[in-house]
Image 1 (tube, one colour):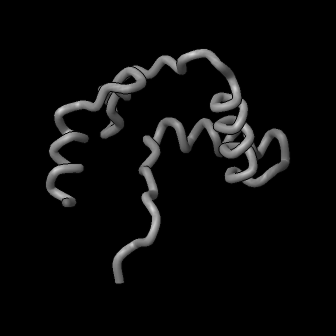
Image 2 (tube, rainbow, N blue to C red):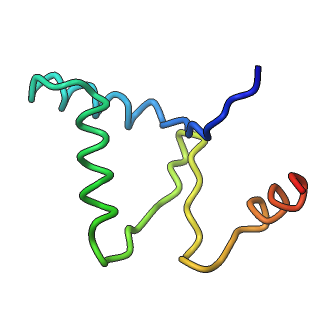
Length: 78
């Protein structure tokens, strides 16, 4: 069965940090992750991204621009 939703994989370092923070705050990791992302998405500021050389995460292109990798994935899905 194919997945209905896109589920991004977080780097091990991010998961580790989320785990320890959530444990400290005594809340589930998903609650903490949702709070962090809601706060970031609610701002008008651009969220700076960096490529973590120790993981498979990729830097996000600026708003309105797609990377060649994303563009090729969009074309391939049509």
